[in-house]
Structure formats: structure tokens, C-alpha cells
Length: 466
Image (cartoon, rainbow, N blue to C red; front, side):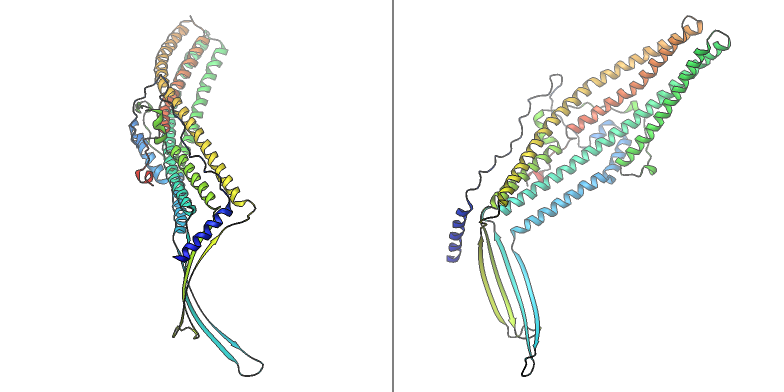
């Protein structure tokens, strides 16, 4: 005890030589969130199933997402990041325990003096050493806290990757269905153009239509065929992209599809903006990274102070080779205090570096929160207006179909020119194609809502308690 007291006095004296460390950095506080979303939207509590994709009532989509969660390289990579973070935590935590070393050796030396006979000297020794750094200033515990927060961030990043992947699969699948619907409309448009071409051709042969009118309608038919080929190409590219998302070789990939119009479009409440910080894994990961940086700053500050190490050893030695018969024993205990007097500013530079890294992470977090708020508002606006635009477009198509029929009849009777028919065709063709795009936008808005609201994610209790 007297020995330890003396050692403590020495350590306190050395602390004075370390100088006064800078004041601790301010603790990070999350940004203030708005009280509500836009006045156009409700702020009801949002309860989202973490298997949110089932709300679209698509068995094919569920199969694709299940496959992606099993096979996607993105998921595997994120899982490996967790393994690395756990290994780093275990390695850092090991510093809190004593290190024990066992050393053994045996030697034989033979000397040949100038006079006299040769002599052989033999020895064998075995020793056990224990060393331990006392965490007086909390440097090691701060490093452990940093590693724990980094592990949390890795866990949250995994969930963020999972959310991004599932949203990507859903978006790609809906795009595939949209293209198939556009192909269906393109075939109808081609059939319509070919039907009108027969009318123009008959009138031309009868001398009641100009050659230019026939050529114009023939070019319209060719244009519809070209559009159909472009859509077929786009479909193959979308299938290839979907294959990569599911971790499948594109050449081996295929999937069942369904009618685009039967996909259910769920209604989603946004909840309160303040809940967003607890519902998005990417924001939780960013906050955990800030906590890790705060602990790193504490560890860097603690490194300014003296380190206290205790060590002990016990050993056996004998003059016999490979034998410990009749050994001589030894026992030792030592303590050391080390204080850096001059290091060229290395340790204080490390503090400045750690503090700067923390400030960068804090600003990145603030930007992520602002972006998240924008994403939710954008998704709310898109969800609110896309359904109305789709309904208007359906009414527009019905009127354009009726208009084209009337124009065809009038053209047959000679009261309208072919240009009127061409204008009616183009308007209807474009309206049909746009309807599929609007339907896709409505579904994508629902997927985006799920994604920007965290997809039903919550902080795991086992991680929240760490």
C-alpha cells in the first residue's frame, strides 16, 4: 500500500507537467425538428410494417425482395462490416484486461579456453509475466465506447442498406410492369395506325387521297413499330438491372409479372417530423458515428496524461538442460508511470484532428436531417398529386379515343383531312403512354414514402441499451 501511495504521488506530480488540457468539447445535440409537415397533409401517427412491401399485394414482388435479401452482394458487404466492427470492439476491449506471457528457454554453451579442458554450461528457465495498464484517466474505456458506437453504426448501416435494397427492388419491379403496360399500349397504337393506314390506302387507290397522305400514315406506322422496339429494349435492360439487385446473373434471370393496374397503392401517414430521427436507420447510424467521435476525442485528451502500468513476474531457473529439477525461483513486482514531456505536438494535434472529425460528422448529420425532411415533404406532395393526375389522365384518354373515332368517320366521309386524323392519333398515343408513367409515379411515390419514413424500422433494444 505504501508503494502504491508513493506511485500515486509521482503520478499526480507528473500530471502537473502535462499542462491543462483543453476544455471538453460540447456534447452533440440533435437539431430542432419542425412541429408538423406541410399544412396540406395530416400528421397522424404512422404505423408501418417492417415488411412494408406486402401492402402492395404482389406475391411476385415479395418473392423478388426475399431473393434480394438472401443473395444481394450489398447485404453481404454490410453484414461483413458488422463482423469487422465486432472484431474491432473485441480487440479494443482486450486492452482493459491484463496481458499474460509465458516464456521458457533452454541453452547449452561450450567454451574452449586456451589452456585446460573444454567446459559446458547449461541452463533452463521458465517465467510467467503479467502486465496491466491502469486506466486512470479513462483513455481505454473511451476507446471501448467509441468501438461500441461504431458497432451500433454498422448495425444501423446494415438496416439502411436493407431498406435501400428493398425499395430499389420494388421500384425496378414496378418499372418493369410499367414498361409492359406501355408495350401493351404501343401495340394498341400500332394496331390503330395500321387500321387507319388501310383506310388511307383505300382512298388513295380510289383517287380520293393524296400520295403524301399515304406516305404520312405509313411513316406513322413505322414510328409506332420503332417505339415498340425501343420499349422491348428498355424492358430487357430493366430485367437486367432487377437481376443485379437480386444477386442473380442477368443471363439466368427471369421473373413472373402481373397486370400493372391491379397493384394496390397503399395510403401512408407520415407521422410527426420529430419521430423521423428515431425511424430512419441512416440517421441513427450518423448519430452513432458522432457518439463514437466524441469518445475518440475523450481518448485523445486522456492521452495527454501519464500512463500507469503494473507488472509482475515469477520464474524458475536451473543449471540443468531441459530440466527444472532443484530450481531457483524468483518473484518480481514493478510499477511505472510514463509522462510525455515533448512529442512535437503530436498528441494535441490528434485532439484537434478528432474534434474536427466530430464537427464534420455533426454537420453531415445536420445535412442528412434536412435532406430527410425534404424527402418526406417531396414524397407527401408526390403521393397527394399523383393519384389525381392519374384520374385526370384516364378521363383524357377516354375523350381522346372518342375524338379519334369521330375524326376517322369524318375522314372517311371526306369532311376532315388526314392531318386531323394524324393529330388525333398522336394525342391519343401520347396520352396512353403518359398514363403508364403516371401510374408508375404513383407507385414510386408510395415506395419513396416507405423508404423516407424508415420502412417501419425501430432502434433494436439490445443496441439502444449498449
